Image 1 (cartoon, rainbow, N blue to C red):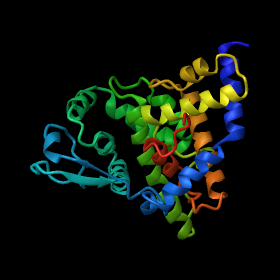
Image 2 (image 1 turned 60 degrees about the horizontal axis):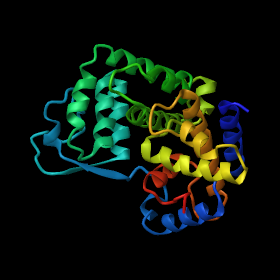
Image 3 (image 1 turned 90 degrees about the vertical axis):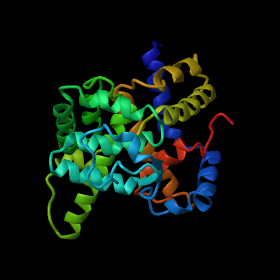
Image 4 (image 1 turned 90 degrees about the horizontal axis):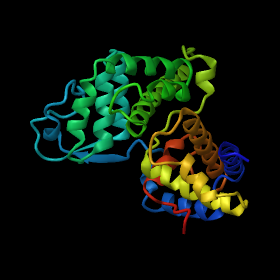
Length: 283
């Protein structure tokens, strides 16, 4: 078996097993405890940032506080969704990226400098616009494929945030259209495809630990090496992103049927829980 064959076998087994009972218990306890504010979804999950630290970043989201504010502010996922959707409606793609990037960096001091460099790239607006069109017409994996390596300095840990918040806005638009008895303009393939979710280093490391354990259980040759290869710290292929989305969405369905009160329509809640370290596969 070649390394790719081993990776495919491991992916298939993870797709069959999904979450072990220990994970379901840990996630259920979290949802009943510190995760209780998210029982209806992750929209209230907020981060702190300092507006004044982003004073040189343009364009600034119109919904965000003025950058003369030197104290901390809080921005929630729901607020980023609204800001991203508004910017996309005006075709202000760089503004949509700024909203998701600020949320993703929080109070990290080097974030503004990195974002300025990204925004200075001459192709950034065109590439973000193309990704937005691909997301709406073809789905998250196609949009990911288009953005991977397209803008210098903009890696998947941050452009998946852009895609996620943009896609959340699409979901709200679809729900409103259905409530009003209207059709929406998304292509059939995109409307049934897994929703875009954030994939970053912390989430990938949880997936790596889980893959290592599953691989060992199935006596897979070099299980830890294969898991480290497919769930590296960055640079994931569009195929890997598709595997991740399929696994998260299937695991969300598993949790929704486990009797722990998990909301079945919120795969982003599982992403949040993995990011927060609610479940440690290595323990």
